[in-house]
Amino acid sequence: MASGWEKNAAYWRQLSRPSWARFLAAVFCLFASFSFIFGTVSFGHPDLTPNVCFAVVNGFCAMLWAVTGSRRMIKTMVLVGPAQFAVNFWLSLVFSKGAGIPALQFAKFEHYAIFNVITAIVLIVAAYSLFMNFFSKEGGRYYGTLTEMRLAGEIHRSLVPEIRSTAASYEFYGHSWPSGEVSGDLVDVVQHDCGWFAYVADVSGHGVPAGVLMTMVKSAARTRLAAIGPRGFLSALNDVLLPLSAPNMYVTLAFLSYTAEKLELATAGHVPILYYEHLSGRVNERFVSNFPVAMKSGVPFETSEIASEPGDVFVILTDGLTEVADRQDRDLGLEPLKGVLAANAGAPLCELADRLRGRALQHGKQTDDQTLLLVRRSSL
Figure 1 (cartoon, rainbow, N blue to C red):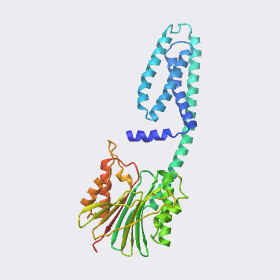
Figure 2 (figure 1 turned 135 degrees about the vertical axis):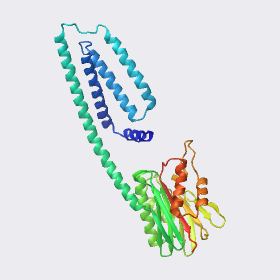
Figure 3 (figure 1 turned 90 degrees about the vertical axis):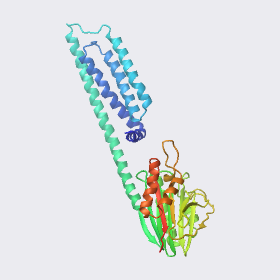
Figure 4 (figure 1 turned 135 degrees about the horizontal axis):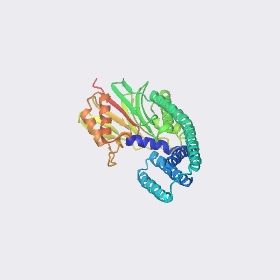
């Protein structure tokens, strides 16, 4: 329930001022009309002053309820109720003095009642019209945006599909779980003439801008690997993306590259690669200190060679898994994931991926894109 309320509050917070004005005016008119209706049936003062005062007070309070409720301002909501009751009680005391209509003044009451009814009808019609205008404009905008986001989500899923493949005595499994419709994470395995290249990239930020840059990363990476191969990959990618990305956006990346019986790895501002050594049963962290891609021009990028034996497993992941926070706001980190890797290194890669992500979700709920790439050298 709280999660749904938070999502609703996020929607209401991004409403434009004209939309808020239409909505609040509709709420005011609707609840103000009640005061004229109740004033008529209560047989109180034969003048309009009490009705107008109650209409203003309760219409304004209804607007406060709408603002505080839609934005989940719980502390303010607690104050609105008692304040509304107190003001209404005070007005009742003020206007109760000398109340009552003399028995022979029904003609005066008739004019009073007719005015109240007409005013109430006008306010209700105004509220209805304002609500319809609000729903028409916001509904069109919302569903138009929703359709575009769903289309973007479909495009993203086609660009970042689940990976199940084998190449040169290695098997691969990759999967990305976006936190929204569009993700900035990318996992890819590219086979080329001399071997294969497997990488995970994480674009800074969220939503459509991150998704657009992620698309450029995949296009540039595949073009470079098809034309030249993995040599100088990070430097070339940095040169391509730097002029195309916004100043506050960059890409962290980690890769494994197999060429002519040589295995290389590199990280560029990314989470360390987890390396399970089958012979020793230990899990180590492997990384190379490089700047993120598309952050700074003219920087060198280094790689590191690594040996592998049959049964060894490499795990490349994004910080959406390591930075999952519990109720005490403590991040999961790498150590629990290393324990899961050590205990399940011989399992099918898809099961290992599920157990690694399951451990993260056990620690806390997903708030960022989560991506895994598992690479295991087969025993053949």
